[in-house]
Structures are given as structure tokens and as C-alpha cells.
Image (cartoon, rainbow, N blue to C red):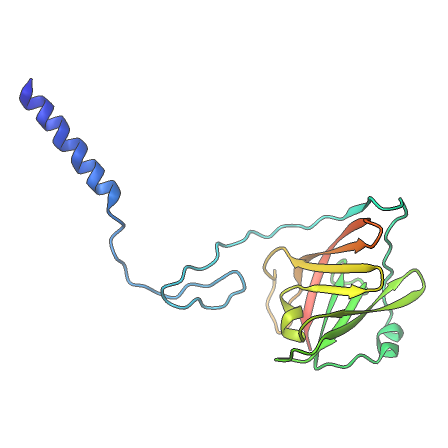
Length: 188
């Protein structure tokens, strides 16, 4: 009986020691992060984020009136005479006209400038930082509204400027909020 107790104790100790020890060292190779960038050695990559289909959420809160952003035409964009090396735009899908268009300079702290159309009126928006800040999603400010672009998944395709699934959340000064689902495209 005493021998059996010792054997059980030894087995339990060996399991406990095995659980406390880490996995065997393997060859360390850089891993890709969520954005596809290589993560430096010694840092863990962000967990892979599955592609999420963003969904529209109608206006809620505020005075009860809906938040409506209309599609921008090419004439709207060219007429705004925005400055900046590269642009980002938000649209419902690849075939749709954008509802937000902004431009900024690469490696610049100067604000990015853009436009949205509220009804028939073109409103100017701006975001802190240049193109680099916009490319990963950012906040745009305008009179009475804040627009937040949030990336919700990796680009489904390749190429120089692949669109990424994103949401555009509009927060109006009266407390109303609406979420638009679509694609965020940045590049030339």
C-alpha cells in the first residue's frame, strides 16, 4: 500500500513538472501580423482576425432624424480640390460611389482633408495625420459630426490598393449614431 502511494505521488509530480515546463524551443521564424507585416523576432503576431461581414446599423438616438450620407460623384471629388499624394475612400461595395473621400500626404503630420455629402450639401472633413494615419482607419471631424473608420478584416484580394472590409460610424452632435458597412480603399 505504501509503495502504491509513493508511485502515485511520483506520477503526479512528473505530470505537474511537465505542465509547468514550456514547450520545446523551436526555430523562431517571423510571423505575419493582421496587416500582413512581418513581426520582429521576440514579439508575437496579432491573432489572425477572421473576415467579418460588416453590417449597417440604422440611426439611433438624437432627435430621431436619420443620418444620411449620399454618394459622391466624380464632379464632387474634383470640385473639392483636395490636396494630398494619396487618397482613401469609403463605399458600400466595390461598384458603389464613395460616401467619404479624403486625401493626405505620406509620412506627414499635416491633417488629411476630405468630403462627405449630407443631402445635397458637400461638407469638408479632416483627420489628424496624413495618409499613413488614414490607411489604418481614423476619425474624421466636421461641423456637427464625427466619422470613424474602423477596419474589420483583412483585404480579401491582392493588388496595390485592395479594399478592406470596414465600418463608418457617424456620431452627430445631438447624440445620434449610425453605422455604415462597406469597404475602405487607400492608395493611388
